[in-house]
Image 1 (cartoon, rainbow, N blue to C red):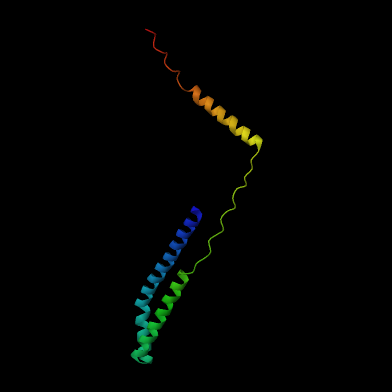
Image 2: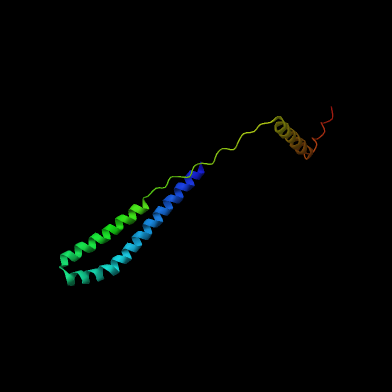
Length: 119
């Protein structure tokens, strides 16, 4: 029961970490590549084409990273239940163990006080 919850939390944390890393890398890339791309494209073509190409490249990278982060993997199958084996010997052993525990618990109690004398 808790295995699926832990798996879901771990998967959500991994998707969040991948998304955050993607956002940070996109911000760093925006700072450096935008300036270099603008200079190269504006020199070769017009400023409008330079802005369009740079915008489309960063938008595409962002969509790809968010798509990778949203991929879901199926949870692992739950472990098979333990086989139930009941035998007379096991039941008798458990009963005798309980009797022994009760005797041991009673042996550590102090005896009750004597009754008061009759008047």
